[in-house]
Image 1: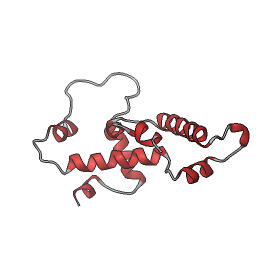
Image 2: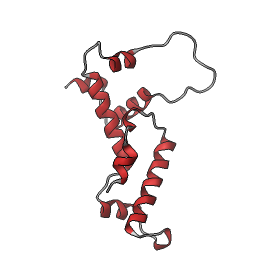
Image 3: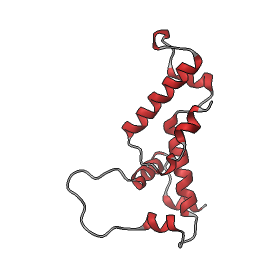
Length: 123
């Protein structure tokens, strides 16, 4: 099916909050239900829809592509612009309030969920 590749295009560098991930999953299931001809009135479980379409949850796929991109950038040379930007620290003070979600925060959360370290990407 074309839904997941279209939804995941260029998502490897987007910091997704848990709320954003849930919204993507809802949209994906709605599209899959429509493609199969089911409505909410049919009371068909999401697991059945995913099994029938042979797809994995979009949250899991986002995590996979984000970690794949992280490993790709970590293995590049030190002079690679993506690597330099990833290791860069901005001068100045942070804004007040809760910080915005950063891409590296998402990567660290993904690495913790699979019980891995940043150094494991070099293998």
